[in-house]
Image (cartoon, rainbow, N blue to C red):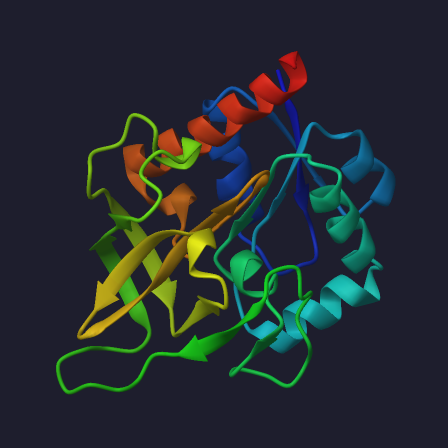
Length: 211
């Protein structure tokens, strides 16, 4: 089974992610070891919480460069929720610079009379990269589970793999570019759809190993 390193920087729902990976046929390893990230077949960066503490926690563990090296190496990489946002250059939520792996910023939803912030609960994806491996075996507009007040705004729109609409605001819900994938929603909380997305990621890892 593929070995997938789940980055532990005390900002993620690690148990649920690992449980989903096990169901998808992978062996998850929770770690903040550079060596484990290098040895693993793929890496997942989860995240729950605020932007500044997250990037500070990553940097205090000297994980910034290993994450950049992992992505540059071509190894399959999946960011989840805050693990998507910290890949960007900066966030309206804080003052710390992000990892800057993807050009763009993290912005806050604008208040509207009929919506709640955070955007919390089930919502439908619009797939802007319908042929991405993330969406294999899914319906055209799958329902997934969100909890967020901020969203990513990439400079290069072609990296956007899916959007979601909250009130009148349509924002990026997922990105995909070569080996780098990341989602704003929580696949580990998204029932069978989320499990299929994790299974799709594991399938890509298997293909990479076989190649």
